[in-house]
Length: 265
Image 1 (cartoon, rainbow, N blue to C red):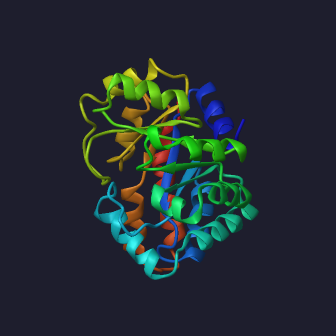
Image 2 (cartoon, rainbow, N blue to C red):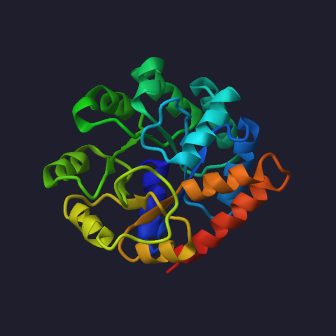
């Protein structure tokens, strides 16, 4: 069992919702990214999605796109992000899932990426635009290097697509709360519970809901029917607002702690 699967299983066993936080590696710098992840760990965050910036991030909203472009301009390449993960891993055992698109993985080399990600200390990988039909080579490489492969499902996913994804996913299934791009919202979609229940019928894997979550009240509501919540754009925006200030990591940790408090049974 991977570090990620073990953490999620223990949380489920005690009725606690997992808090997963997404950060863009390299914004405002790779050195500060290490500080941010360590602060999130200290705040009680259960897993981190470490975003590898990509020049054409179709699923990302304005906040994450802007952060990615800043990170790329500062040299946040795949090798340097993996080096950053190694530094995080020397100081923390928090589960880390690398999140990117298929193009950077393909350019790096599928087998090489899986090998180097595992060596750096990754527990899993999300490739936002990787479809089950194209995933065979990646899944083989991920299995060979004991990496979880997390897939996304949307409210518009058909029963057939839900079944296919649930058969090949490991770690958890990422349930997108709404169609469209990422970005903080104020509401919880009325049909979200039904969507998660449809996915639940197809798998025993933990189900984590993301896209649009920014406030403790949303975390608490979604935790009533999902195993975990993913907070991305709101945290990325907070980090951007802090710039390179000395209090950046502390501010990220304080925000995460307020969200984590809403996950407790």
